[in-house]
Image 1 (cartoon, rainbow, N blue to C red):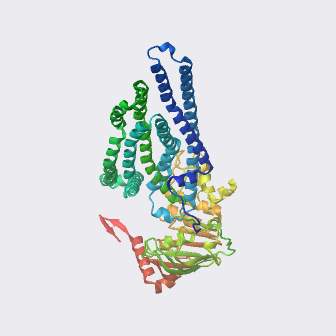
Image 2 (cartoon, rainbow, N blue to C red):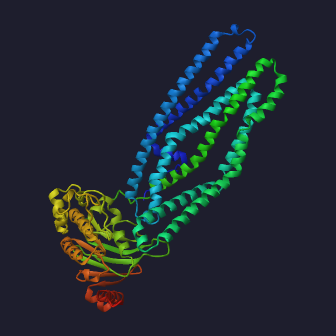
Length: 600
């Protein structure tokens, strides 16, 4: 794995780093937003100038400087025009940049998910991944498109306003600033609470858990209904929903007191300004000169509430957004198998040497396992459920990395083989066949996208599925799950085997590939296996011993350990675990139902 060479950025700095070159667009959008906010407050001061001019000639309004008044009106119009242009440009640029950034981020996330170890998916629910890729991405897009520029404007508006107010009268400006400082201190104390980050993380965890339960509930709806577990399954969702509600309430309670104090002082500028103005009036040189200043402070000082309130809302929102960035970044920083290996095996025997692996520390799933699969032979891997059979296959594919020992193909450690090359060397038929909502042709082509149509059809013929495909409404162009084309479990499995034929990898892993097939489909799948195994190194994981009895060798796994190796006849004499498996298979084969009694 690649080592970290510098301190990793966090929060908003990391989000800008992920934005890449498009952060320049965001910076420009924020600058335009600041300019629009400056233009927005100009009318307050031009109106003030008009009022001052009129009051200066209140006894003879006709003597007021009409040119000055017209100039101030023109400035007001120009400021409104600048505000409109800058606000529109800022919004357009920020939206464009946000869409481009989220597009790239989602691509990066999906590419990363396709490269990282499958161990990540073991400990992460579908709902959590969906929330990160979809929901958190949407929130980040909204933050970049709208809220980032709003934060810039919300900061700039009070700064520009207060600078001008200090120029007008520093004493009243300090009075205006006092409640703002108190309210910001309240907000800061709220955000600096030690459990603030923990509460945000717990809030995201609760939401992910709730979404994961919803996904599982919907996917398993048929099973829930068949076993009449609708109420109990719903109660699980209800429990997760109640937990989410509890976390939201605790978050609100934690914020209630400081936020209440914040709002109490936040809008209190007028309460501070009024007595201050009454105290300062006697010190003024001219009542008429001081009156417009007081009115300006009342008008503009009270108007500071809106931008500061927006800033407060954006700051609170940003804490949720940045938690989403952290979770997204957690995926992007997941370690990947090394891509720099140069190993290229020319022989295709497989050797496990003292391999150890555990999903959970202290509970070995594979415990000091060593064996060899000679090139061009078929090896059956059997044993009780949970014995480590599928784990061994996944270790060979580098779905996980062994904690000790080595796995070699043709004498080359698989860690030295580039992942793309390793994927070319090994084909895997999963226990549960996965077909995509695409044409049957494209589903088979996943084994070799460069194959000709004739090669696709030949692979289907080898898998014994060609006739079934031809009978479908659109043949090979039929979309799986649509076009009135619904395949049985055995037919889906044969489509998966057709992929492996098309891939033509020298090493093949068959993981319980006939587990859900009926007798007819099982016979066809077994015939396909016989063709597939020719001149290849095959590892066949099986519960039904009759499917592997004629294998060149059998390996027996129990509780993560290799407890037997040899032929069927040898293991019958020497391996107790294998003997028990044979007896269990024989009892299953004799199983029947008669006169209300299950017999075995």
